[in-house]
Image (spheres, rainbow, N blue to C red):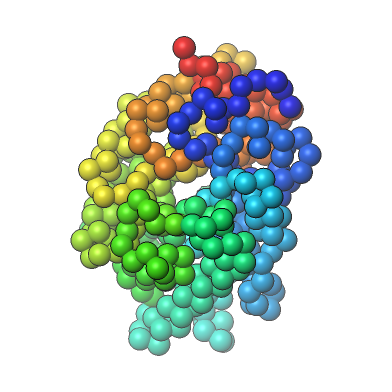
Length: 337
Ligand code: XIL
């Protein structure tokens, strides 16, 4: 691990990274602990990760490794995610015969109970790592992920997922209601001093149409009294993403009574990747973090530790390369002058 300034020492905002258990040992672990304040489980807190083949809930070994790592090293954990249309067991949405749950009172009751049980079991296991707000590493959770539609055809602006088909817009409020009871039971109000900040999270919020639908949904949730503490901007970007749009997104939501976080930042390059692009990417990261520094954010998280471990590895979107060496992106963030 190179002898360079830790990125976290150059930022006022907590700096996070998405990892799995491979980054909790050896040199990757050293790199995580040197540069970051916070981790997000890249895959192992997702709904499907918690169940065995017989549909029994059990903490998976990766989740255990991540929580042990966070507890032992005093690192914050941003949980991801409780409700998502993807990486969720098919049986959540099926009856005992394996048929799709109907969108009637019976189907609604079954899915509502499953969602409630799921959230309660995740929270109960996490609570074995200490009291929320009193030593537990969990500081925030993406309660719902990617519920906003990519296209404008429906007036509600919501994704037509199985959750939506069976429960309608209610699925979002129910998830927050259950998460609030499970994580923040003694802190009924929303706001800054709640132990576990409950987030809604989505991508392309820097793009106008998606942003409008996202903003309108959060407004509706707040007007219904849903205890949503935070709005997450994934920010899966490319070199053609206008930097001004990042500022636009963070400004847009700043007038709502919520905190904001950048939850899944990466910046893809066109393939085949050249050294010139890697340098340009350094300037992009510099400009993006200039904007992040101007906003009051809960945390900024990059979606992976190294390029080779990225979900978009071909496009070299991250701050460290496969040899754990700092890329120009590192200098863009840590040494922007
Ligand atoms: C991705 C992971 O990085 C991959 O390893 C996995 O195969 C699929 O999911 N938006 C999200 C993340 O909210 O959970 C996704 O993570 C990336 C897009």
